[in-house]
Image (cartoon, rainbow, N blue to C red; front, top):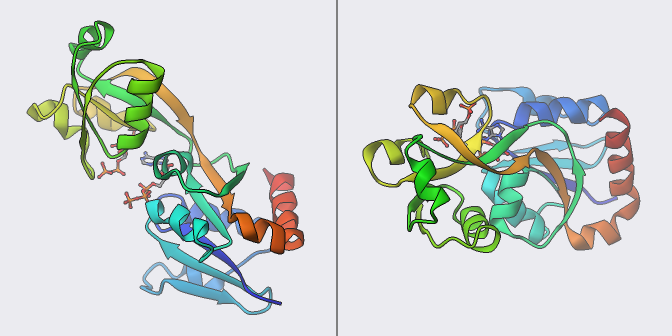
Length: 211
Ligand SMILES: Nc1ncnc2c1ncn2[C@@H]1O[C@H](COP(=O)(O)OP(=O)(O)OP(=O)(O)O)[C@@H](O)[C@H]1O
Ligand SMILES: O=P(O)(O)OC[C@H]1O[C@H](OP(=O)(O)OP(=O)(O)O)[C@H](O)[C@@H]1O
């Protein structure tokens, strides 16, 4: 039997993902060691391999077949646009992609002004403003601390993830429009889905029964 390989993001979703797999008997003791710098873990008994990558790289590993299965946020799936099957909504990691800014930006949005939009998600932002709203905007790609942009005058609004809303609140910003709800998803390589159908379907069924 060959190894079935899982790509997991090493960020926020990691601990919930391990908890979930543990509930269906898929465990990997050595992966729980928080201090470890190791990136790949093996469960010899079940012939499983797990590796930890940057969240946005999970779809890349899955599309190319370096991983059979990936666990990743819907935001990353939308942003990366990789060819793979999205098979399950895992129901954790819930948050919302939003257009945010100071209250004063509401008018600019309403009147379809040519505004600047700072974001870590240029593809999601483009799709929202161009295809859904038919509004021309200038997209500025950032890599983090997106809430800074409207405060320091880099952009009028941002497109970013809102979970509790505390980052917005502490920086005097508001949700102006909701783009889409997000949560963690299980994704599968298209060839693996055929070649390892029995094992992968079993995992999907087991997960469905606990979700
Ligand atoms: N408050 C939140 N902020 C960001 N992401 C969140 C939040 N709540 C849930 N998520 C989900 O968790 C996923 C992983 O988020 P995380 O912040 O760990 O980033 P990452 O995608 O691993 O990348 P990076 O480490 O480069 O920031 C996101 O893609 C998103 O779907
Ligand atoms: O609504 P909240 O619960 O406050 O969560 C949302 C914040 O968390 C994320 O940032 P993250 O902590 O990943 O840091 P980053 O801005 O450097 O990406 C996201 O980009 C928001 O800034």
